[in-house]
Length: 223
Length: 407
Ligand SMILES: Nc1ncnc2c1ncn2[C@@H]1O[C@H](COP(=O)(O)OP(=O)(O)OP(=O)(O)O)[C@@H](O)[C@H]1O
Ligand SMILES: [Mg+2]
Image 1 (cartoon, each protein chain N blue to C red):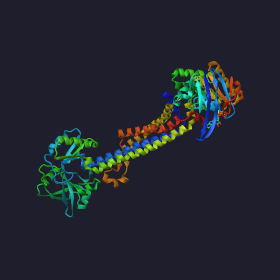
Image 2: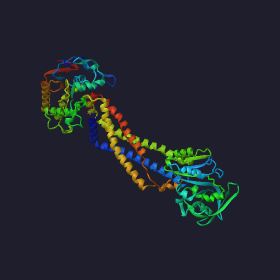
Image 3: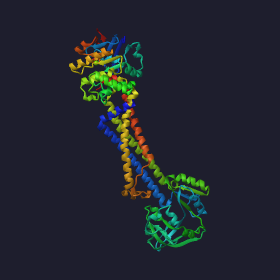
Image 4: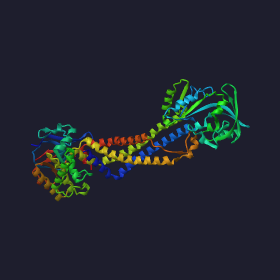
């Protein structure tokens, strides 16, 4: 068991009084090395769940265990360190720091972890080559296509060797061919390095590539 | 790690070139103006003090105790040469000159006027005051029968060069003092009270006229730097160690001039404040706009595990860099313009008529002072960092989830 949620709920409060329940008691268990898609219609709670799993938001109630640590009990200040060491992130779009090159974006996460400059550089070059961007390492994000940017984001997410990579609709802004190759890349990295991937999607093709599908509906796991 | 944040800050500055340029200009012009204005005021003060002290007063005056309250012939002291000998031994003292001061009636054939009569030693006076430079017509004192009076006084008496005037007064022994002199020179100092009300004769002539018996009314002292007048006057008082004598610095001799200078020195802080506000607003505007524009990016940075204090330093660096670049520009602008006008002078002749009484020159020569330049610079740099703390804290306190959602 890598991640386990117990009766996880999230209710947003808008303007202090309107309550929107986004998650209504989610219990899931994800093992090390899994390749999981979270599916469900718009508004079903996919983003809410990923934000909680990524320690970016706090649940209304319930617990989230990473191995035997309940991260809902960790102080907000300490969570940045937890995210840095344990979790890789890929967001829907505009993942990268605009003022840094592809290489520097990948290096950034290792820099925060205090990896020395030469090791950092070598590793970033290797990973970028691995995701097929060997010729693009010195490009700035604005000079790369959306698909290339997402590949850099994937490279960055695994650079610090996290336990899990969380990706909220990483293919939503890509055409279907580019989307497919990005998911293929993630799947290969999952197989090669044993890194757990959890990603959400609307896309039937992407769901089909997942080894396991978690279906959300109205804030509940339905299958 | 610091280096990486500096790099990001640098690139962000370059990314928003136009905005950065505006900020750098605001800082540069602000600091440049501040340095220049401060140099201008310092230069003007120096000239005012210099003009005042060199005209007649000197930097320091020594009298019999109470002379400054009651300027009379009776307020004199004996053996001035002994005091002079002591004074010339002090390193800070440049020149010393004894004087006799009294009031008397100056008459021509047609008119008369009550004036302040000064007996001076012409050669010694040359290195203490610049009265001789102010002789507009004729020459300075030559023999013991010559007299130098203000141009306005000459007009009032209706006399010109070479004419005879008579001084009448009371001598120290109570006898009537009366002697005739020929007008040797006319003074134009620009200061009315001198041009209308002063008559100069030689020290020897005054000794004789007032039957002084080798007593003096005043010893005027010139020192190396007018700014040290207070300190040196205290040293002199200690040295002379006589309760019968008063030792006054120019600040005590002309409290009005001193207050004027002090008022200006206080006023300049208002200018400093205004410039700081302009600089602060300039930097705040740029940095805050830059931060708000990058909300999404800060969300990503925070989500990835960047610590809040790292985000703060990233933003503060940006502001500091803008501050430093602007300061270099401002330093150049302020110093170059001050040095240039320090040589060329700034023509204020249009205003000098009104300012004559304050010993202002037609040309003001700005003068850089290291302390004031350094103060301006440090203040601008501090302001540029302090002002960035608000946008920096704003960025650091963003909730990553919310920030990422904004594009
Ligand atoms: N910040 C928020 N404030 C208020 N309500 C929110 C907020 N975020 C999400 N919600 C609500 O919570 C519910 C779940 O939203 P969530 O974004 O998790 O769904 P989703 O499955 O990711 O949808 P989509 O596929 O459109 O991205 C929705 O009803 C949504 O309106
Ligand atoms: Mg979503």
